[in-house]
Length: 388
Image (cartoon, rainbow, N blue to C red; front, side, top):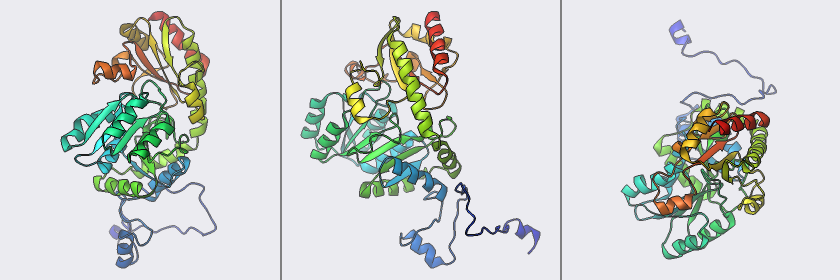
């Protein structure tokens, strides 16, 4: 063998069968082969297990998918490049021209934009209501054949809590699938409810470091098989290196989520006592109108606290710029604390009625609480309030 050949076919070190790595290898290769063409064809036809091309499947990525599916109490998971990608590909996979989708004003702006702008061009119709309007939800489902109900709980950005039992039962009665963006609640909550598909932005809690982007769709049965097949065709598979970082990050997921939730409750309690602040939205507060429902549905109340400053948007700008420990940026779930000031809040695309449903006010501010010492966070919030 010439050296030019040798460097392209390096020897494989032997690994004894009774000598096990504690961590699964990171398979960053794209291509796979079998000893025979017949075995390759059998795998492609789904007649045997294996891998052929990492855009379709990869063992490192599959380890992450199986982990997330187990946490959410479902059979299967497919991952992709971002949370928005997961939402978009799910909507594309499950709808066609003439279908109707019910969605809600209290939710992620890109979800609304995908339905009202992108999918509308291809003949998918949609209706928006408030997540609290049970009569309106029932009226829409009874009056319009609906393919899909897509919603969030807690909602982004004002942490309203959806009544999961009501929404899933109503959708099931009228033959609609349910898709729950479960990003705020995390991977370990809501699995006991009759939700067809869960969507997660892995960018948030999977590593906790804000260093990797990804999305996931989790579910069972034929619906999940259809989603997986469509995802393969659209070609946005999560890369193995990112998947390996997420598997590693998930080892500390529960420690992080629970510490951040405890810090979020401390911040919410402190804000609720401040004269500069009104309308603190955090479902862990006993006085919050969603607290009873959240206590029934959730084990942890989450890391996002939203509130309004009495003095309005410009005071919110001064407040955000005076903070030292909170980064002025989007996203949530990372170990450092973040703030979305009024000027960066969503809802600009909503009508006055829809904005009223959304509960986003002129002085609304969203905090994502990290794992810093809570006393340091409160001190930073206090000095910023005084400056604002």
